Image 1 (cartoon, rainbow, N blue to C red):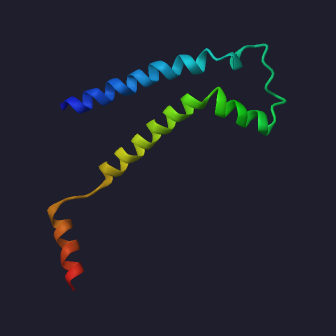
Image 2: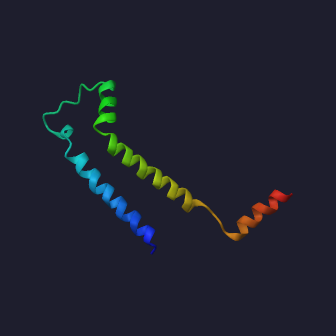
Image 3: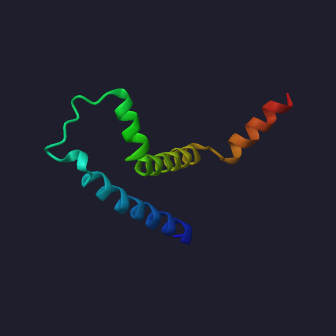
Length: 90
């Protein structure tokens, strides 16, 4: 395998190793926390202050997944490329 593939795997594992403890040990999950009366403003404030880095990292991971999926879907066989070029000339 290529070196870049190994580096990407190590980076993803590192990001997960950082995010999982941040999410699981957050004080929001304590039994004494009361989130039933959270307003929309309080939710937005919490998402933009306390959860900003995990949301950014998850966004980066999801965008990497979408770029990888679009790359895998491409069809670059010779017959398809030739067919597209012939159709453009007509």
